[in-house]
Structures are given as C-alpha cells and as structure tokens.
Length: 258
Image (tube, one colour):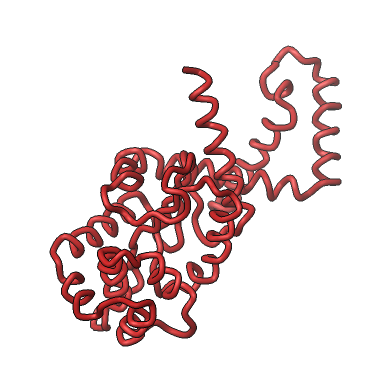
C-alpha cells in the first residue's frame, strides 16, 4: 500500500473522529444504530466533499507537527528571542511568526505581500524573517548566501526592513550586483555593508540558522513557525491567519489556566 493510500485512510479516520466521536468511542452502540450514524456521516461527506480537503490539511498539519515539533522546541528560544534579531511588525506583539526564507525563492517573494498584509492587518504580530539560503549550488556564485549576509549587515545601519522589502519585491533574478544596487537604493553605505558582511558574527549567524532550519526539517522555502504550528510553502493569507488565531487562542488558554 502506497503512502497516498495510507494518508487517505488516515484522513477518513480523522473525519470519522471529528464527525462521529460517539461512534468512534462508544463500543456499546447497537450495530443497527451505528450503521445509521455511519450512513449519515457518509451522506454528509458526499454532499460536502470539501470536508475531506479540510481534514486532509489537518492531517498534514498534525503529521508535520509530530515530525518537527520536538526540534522546534529545542531551538525556539534562539529563533524567537535572539538578541539583536531583525523584527518586523510589532516588536511587542502577542504572536510571533518565524519565517525561514531565501531571497532567491520565487515562492517566498510571491508570498511576501500576503505575509506583510497579515502583519499589517493584525497589528499585534512579531515577524522574524530568518535567513535560510538553501538555493545556492556548488560551483555557482552563492547569491542567496551573499544576500543573507547583506541583510544582516544592513541591520547594523538600521535599514534591515528597507533592504528586506526591496529585495523581496525586486523584479527578475537576484544577482550579486543586484544586491549591492538594492542596498545603494535604500541608502546603505556599501563600503561598510561589505565590511560587515565579512564579520565572523554575521557569517556564523547565517550558518547557525541554516543548520537549525535543516535540523528542524525544513526542506524548502518558505517555512513558518507560528506558536505550536508549522506552515510549509506559500500557504496564503488564510492559512497563516488560521495559525495566528490558533497560537493566540493557545496563549489565552494558558494565561487563563494560570
């Protein structure tokens, strides 16, 4: 049996759990009554097949959390609270979004307006873009790595946001010359930028974040950590909003419990 078939079975099991918990848990139900309930569930799913898609997404979310969750907790302190990390949005926000991205990633760049719209619309989100330059290839100019170091160096001139927005919204393929052109356009001192890019602390920061992202299990970009949720790929405004709401609800519940 292939992985897709196993996932379908798991989805149906999840749907059954969500829509007929009594059937799933109570073994004393009369067989005839059980059959009626199962028929109701089946009819409902046939009339509302979009429920299957919702359940499948929920299954994928749970599987991702099970795979990545322990590693995320190991690195959460660094990812969310690193001193001097670049923070967009509300630095005192009640929900933190950590994004693993690559400046050359087309999906990251196309998804960027959705992310920034959510951050702006909400007004209470800490958004931490983390450098994850994974698109460089052997024997090629490491443009992603250069851009990552340039971004961190730009922060030392208090222009990380300006550089980040300009790089993420630039047209065409990013090149090394293009990186410095963007830097100049947003008012950075290029000589200082290049000097800071070679600072061992900046180099180590990029290397550490790259290693952490891989250890967590991110294999592509973009990837988001939002509370106890993980969103992989360009999931869109709605998927990110769901994760933010879930994180905020979990925080509220934990606060009420204390």
